[in-house]
Amino acid sequence: MKTQSKAANVAWMVVVVLLWAICFPFIVTGLPDAPPLLFAALRAFLAGGLLFAVHLVLRRRAPYPFSPRDLGLLSLIGLSYTAMGFGGMFLAAGHLSPGLATVLASTQPLIAAAIAAAWLGETLQIKGIAGLVIGFLGVALLSWSGFDNNNAGYLWGVTWVLMGAIGIAIGNILLKNRAGRSVAAPMAVQLLIGGGILLAASAVGGEQWEIRWTFRFTGSLLILSALATAAMVYLWFALLARAPLNRLNVFSFLTPVLGLLIGFMFFEERLQPVQILGIVVVIIGIAMMQGRNAVVAPDESATPP
Image 1 (cartoon, helix red, strand yellow):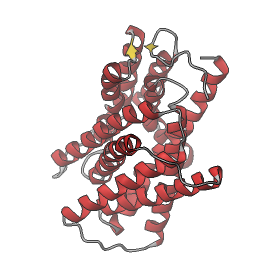
Image 2: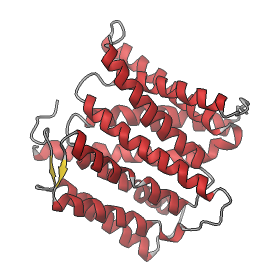
Image 3: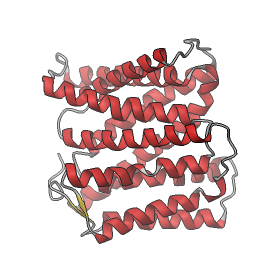
């Protein structure tokens, strides 16, 4: 991959991670006004509708014609990436300490790397394995001060976070498998399918469909849907056509880094020495994954579309 293309991928991945990093604060902000699965379903529906509108504007023609195979694959993506990923994220909020939740969620790139080796033919070399492990250890250092498990819903919280991590890992594999074609329409469809699954789970789980349309809930829903979902998945799916999954997925370790830096710059929060060390370790891990001989993948030498 050309240096210029690689630099562009890195820049866009930082944007993707920043959009992903704002998810949790806005989920926590909106949860007092709506049940979690219904909230997650509304997020997916609104984001899917926005992306479908983008597709119609950009294409200026009839909706993208999906084959039965396409619809089957997008249904699996909707189930894993959207329903399991979003559902786990919303259900876990408030049940775990931020530190433990961050570390558990950061198992996603590790899970995806294991699946990618068998499914996508992406193999991590020693340098790549070391980079992935170092990045994960950096996240653990960042989250060290947040390990407080004195919560009655601790085990449920662990379950939901791991369910979300597994769902997103599987979804990323499926997304990579379909990358390189139309972006907005397939992402809209999988979000709408995932939203339907979340809505069904909300009904089966006995959630009361009562929403307080407060300013904080409406604002949280709009930001989560437009920026942290529609814009994020559009960019992410487009990037998957440009580089191996493992090279991109390791950037998810930056999520807690950006969260800490936002707190430091805008909310006068102090960075502890162990957190500064964690930031450095995460960056080293990501840099190792971007180097030569870290990942062997079929599309490593492909020219970005």
